[in-house]
Image 1 (tube, rainbow, N blue to C red):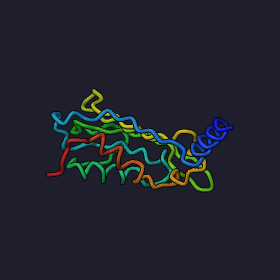
Image 2 (tube, rainbow, N blue to C red; image 1 turned 90 degrees about the vertical axis):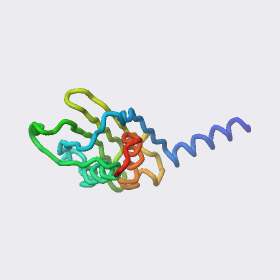
Image 3 (cartoon, one colour; image 1 turned 60 degrees about the horizontal axis):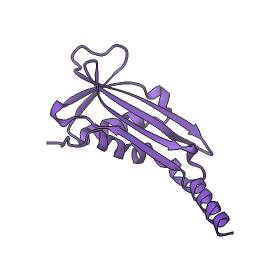
Image 4 (cartoon, helix red, strand yellow; image 1 turned 180 degrees about the vertical axis):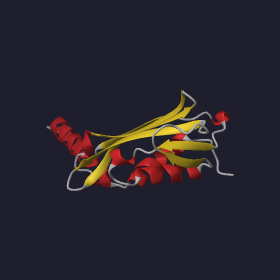
Length: 147
């Protein structure tokens, strides 16, 4: 009887709180990333917030940014591409996002946010893109400090 109650409690908590994961391979601060060009991928995110959140996050770490569409400008040594998935449950919310930072053709950093199980009944799934992505960006650029 105790085991059954314990299992029901664990399952209930999983449904209520959901589970988020963050996978980050931070940028080596010795690479001296000062400016990054960001590929405009806003049309895939649908929430209209992602690119602003990324720019604010990079600025917070002293990395200036510019947006480009089409081909990468020739003067962009560092560039970022991003991808996100938005889903719906009474309202839209971001359930997955990836950031890939490159220097030339070499990937120098990677960051991922993922809401497992769709968030269940957790109200945290409707948190803003900023609330979800700020810790991810901070970990990606850990060691970079705005001067």
